[in-house]
Amino acid sequence: MNLSSATTAFQYLTALFGAFLAALWLSLIFWTYRDIRSRTQDALVQILAALTTGVMGPFGLVIYLILRPSQTIDQAYQHTLEEEALLTEIEEQPICPGCGNRTRADWQLCPNCHTHLRKGCENCGRLLELSWQICPYCGTPVAGVRAEVGLEPGAS
Ligand SMILES: [Zn+2]
Ligand SMILES: [Zn+2]
Image (cartoon, rainbow, N blue to C red; front, side, top):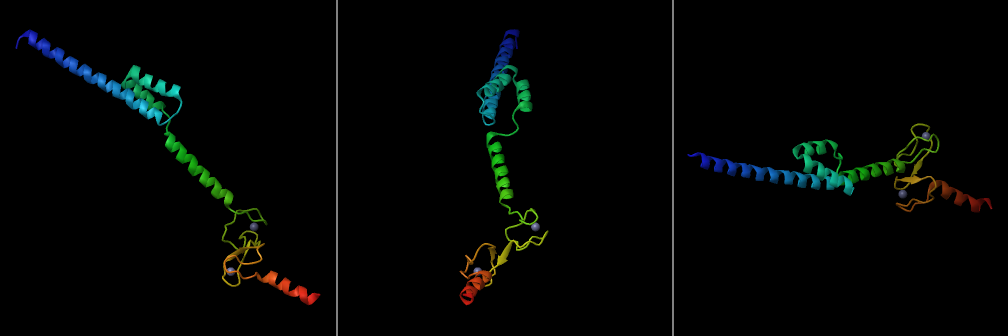
């Protein structure tokens, strides 16, 4: 093996290594750009992130990984949806008119102040709002109302 062929081999290896580095560099920029696009819609931030990796390569990537938004747009959206669902759930919880504590839709009495919240249907036993005068499940008139209706003709 003479000197010139060794030099050629070295040059060849260097070129190969250089090409590999360039490809790696480009794919880092590509990866960063794709990643930042899933995390923000701000074009300036997207360009800055790609530039950071473009200029500093692997080091830029490390900086990007530290600084990037922790949630993707999809994750942030899911998070908002979950929070909204939780809020409506809390808002839909009825409040006791007696003491103001939260009650549940299937309670007849407030466990705190014993205020009547609902009444049971005489016929089917399902829970009715106090203002209802007829059971919406089986059609049975509510007892108190029926008694009033029955009293009126007798009184007159
Ligand atoms: Zn109460
Ligand atoms: Zn009923």
